[in-house]
Length: 252
Image 1: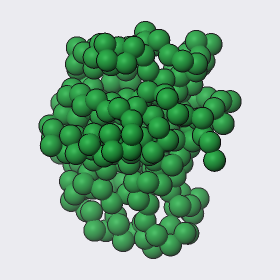
Image 2 (image 1 turned 180 degrees about the vertical axis):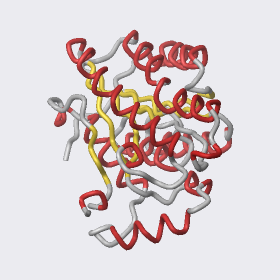
Image 3 (image 1 turned 180 degrees about the horizontal axis):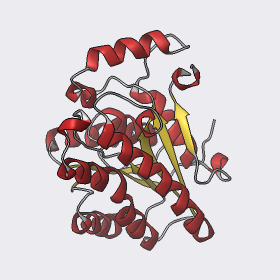
Image 4 (image 1 turned 30 degrees about the vertical axis):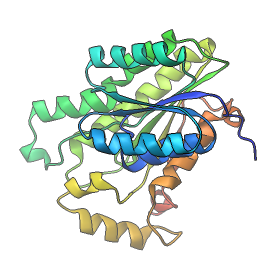
């Protein structure tokens, strides 16, 4: 099936591993040029870029912290210099402190809010300024912690809730400018990020037991939904958060 993405250009933040990497490779499979953004591990970013190029499309490797507006501006300047425009932006980079609320400080809280939610502002502002071939699509990656209580997830969960609220407000503002903005909320995915959870094993076990489809999510499950939201087939979906969790959240 032709998803009508061939020849488009995309930036996927935090795309050297995990869900971001799956999204980047899925876009490349559909003949989309992909800019890989990373912060620390250049080796992994270069490996992902090599896999993208092996699919017959272009790849850029861009270091930058999306929580720093100057870094974001440089990312988009480089894309403009190399490609002259951008049609797809996937805001996937995330961070945060996983501690009980009794151990959190405002510094921890501000950090999670800044990188997981506030970073969307400079991203959309720079994305708006680039030329494109037709409609633009921005997809932000969220998590079920935005609407459900998860142990040690207070700061990150609040930042994801803020992210989803921003998606709704930005979608209303930018729809008339030809930018479609949505979010994908992922259930439990066993990626490197989960290694930082002190209760990782119990989270995985609960997810396995509660998920109606009988298995955990994998990064590709999330990537598939992100891809759909980038296609013209989703042209009338604006400001929504699509949940991808195998049915986990529908159970009482």
